[in-house]
Amino acid sequence: MSDSYQSGEKPKINPFLPLYFSVILVIGIGAGYFLSFNSPIPGYGGKSQNDNAYSKITSLLEYIKLDYVDTINEKQLVERTVTSMLQSLDPHSSYIPASDFAQVNESLEGNFEGIGIEFNIINDTIRVITPISGGPSEKLGIRAGDKIVKVDGKNIAGIKITNKEVFEKLRGKEGSEVSVSVLRAGVATAIDFKITRGEIPLYSIDISYIVKPGIGYMKISRFAATTYEEYLAAFNDLTKKGMKKLILDLRGNPGGFLKAAVDIADEFLMNGLHIVYTEGRANPKKVYKSTERGSFENSPLVILIDEGSASASEIVAGAVQDNDRATIIGRRSFGKGLVQDQRDLPDGSAVRLTVARYYTPTGRCIQKSYEKGTEEYYQEEIGRYSDGELVSADSNKFDKSKKFITPGGKIVYGGGGIMPDVFVSLDTAKYSHFVNRLFYTGLITEFGFSYSDKHRDELTKKYTADKFVTDFVLSDNIIVEFYELLQKKKVEIPDSERTKSTANLKQLIKALIGRNLYDKDAYYPIINQTDNSIKKAIEVLEKPLK
Image (cartoon, rainbow, N blue to C red):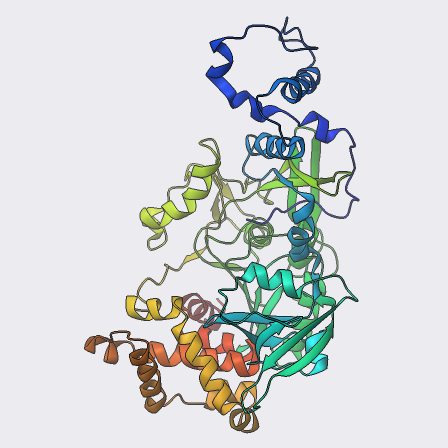
């Protein structure tokens, strides 16, 4: 789960922090100490519980360095100790090694450095889903569907390459160069490109479009440094297309920057209303209020949440719910209401320490319990499925005694996460086991790529993205082609599935072809057609006002 921490202040540096954190792990050496040695640790007499704790840590580290049976990796010991110490506090205090710092931060900063492609690995070959708009690859002419077979002259096809290895080969410092060779449908020989890496924007709004006349839909996948600006651009575009009502989809959004969440909530609330407040032992209560800014303060609004919506997502949902501003639809959110403050360390690593809790305007604490430990804390989300909470609102296990009243008289609940106003169960019957298996083994994706490669020119000349969504019909002959692929792969096709799964297969294959041809502009509008939460949101928004 992404850490949501207070941004805006420059991270503070404490040069002594690594020393303070150095040795807690060694406590685990346990019984072996008592077998034969009873002499005091050098430099530490151990006379009183009031002895300086830092002196104990540094002395113990020195003792390990001098007398441990094997040579130790001091840096590794310190890093494991820091990690263990922070994990013992709560599930969201964390240590970020210097080697991981850039990658961990890039989803929040809103950019990374590389060649600028979205890719998938199909049949052990890197396939370009789409070149990122404005990125180095797009400018050079790399296209969706291209197969990257060599990087810097070395073959990378058919070698069981992993996503991590692709990142390592294609990402790099802005201004550095990398050579790639691609195979393209209809071109007999490989095409060579020398790409100068650049800064690539990482968008937090996956899609925005008019889902029905007058009703806009927008999906935000994270709350990053650029989210608010992205929102404004998408909102203005939807407004020009006639949007009067909005569905804001925060499902699966793990959070991000507090400021981004406050800015988005401010767009929906009248001036002077509480959005969220934070409070901790060493951090006095700080209240965030809405301002005069806001261009959608009175129009109908629905927000979608689920068990994957956390932190900043819960701030937005809680703010509009507690102010009686919108209808929340879906399932109970994750329950991540701890605030982290980031301290950068001299070696390039960082610590994110929990310093406060989030509270909604009515005073609800968003954070769910973590008293039983970190492992059970994260397993709780899985437990919701086995306990039936994801399919029945009556099966919710949260503390129903923690009731709060909104200004409009509506009862809302604390105890962890945001409870929706309208429950929509997890659609466990949407796709059969057979279809799910085909999807997760990549066979549907492979067919989508193959069909797109064969028909790219004719389809893109005939359809725009919007027209592809509304007018392209995936014929039975295409399904026959797909079944022929399955037979080549020696996949058994139960007779019952040929009838039962055809509609689902047609939707998935059409969506994947649409993604390969038009990226998200076709993919989401097709997939969302059978989404029960979006259907319910449309139903709520189309009801006449009382």
